Length: 480
Ligand SMILES: [Zn+2]
Image 1 (cartoon, helix red, strand yellow):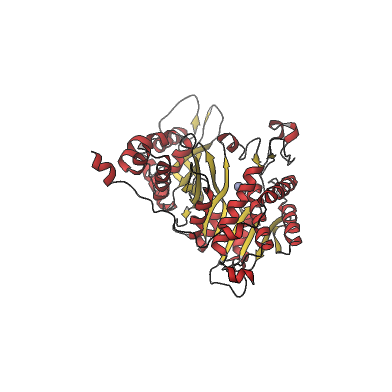
Image 2 (cartoon, protein in one colour):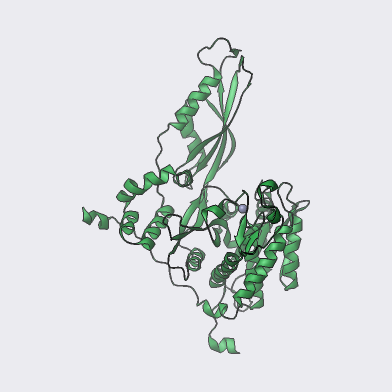
């Protein structure tokens, strides 16, 4: 049996060597000072009210613009609707170094979701930007995603101050309305794409999680793709009637049967390449027996997959989900309506065609049920074999032996989904480490980030950005 363990092991290629030696670009930065500066900037940014709705992102864009312009970085603000500001800041490549690589884009969204202030500590309310005695910065957007916005801002400032020799443009884009309609990014993509023309992009998506699979081990999932979404109304029809007399073929009963068919459909949990890579890397880092289990598809399917299917979060990552999210009908107790519908939020893995997916559902429920398509969009993914992906993975775990970085497909979508179809390689990764408890701040209460993680985040992001955008200068040149 043992031969089988080794003969079938899935191997993940090691990360390629860095494109340039990064240390010369980091050694002259006072990183403690960077942490303090980023902290103050984030506190101020959190206090700018960009709660969506209504958004008012122009205020956030003006805040960022003021910081960038003070340092001599060119910015533009474009409003997708009055008050919905979208900011672009560009540091151009040095003319004599310019390569034909398209720009590297650092994307964030300015808006934040609403909050329920009563659930937060009074002295650390969602708009406070409080820095507490433990070095924690509190406020709506600390994680999603003003914190990352500030890491991107600091990266821009450092590139400018250090006069980094760029061979490609580095662009910071901060957009409106990610949380509600995605109209800011769609407007920028539709109106200014020739100007932006991002070859690669860093955006939100994954972030490091302590003790994700094993205690003591941190996992940094880098989102390389996003599931698509198919939003449906599923209609059933029948004879209207009186509630006193149940009859066959009534609409609500037909709808119920269709729902049961969908819920009992055979589910094939698919361990797609990206996720398989992540697990192999996790097992490799953990070592011992785990290395073999994670790398062996048979053992993995036997021992690990059932566990993943039990947890709603990981289950959603493995399958095309069909999620019942609402119902509507006459809703009078004594009236049998002629038509009723259920609302379904389905999320499909990249590579699944939305139309074929809907046809499959139709096949399951039969021809009497009608699907009304509210929205259907395929998922998409960027390659793992990409220098930006490698750089993000490299610096995520630098000097952290019990940490591992690997690819995932996000179950939700971000603004990256609009850029990938235009040829951009987009990666979702906020280079910080949080606990499961801190994760609850995402769209929840007590959203916060530690000053230390913010500072380390800048360090990691700056390292990755410089690696893929700068030209190595030899000593002779730098001494000139
Ligand atoms: Zn977000």
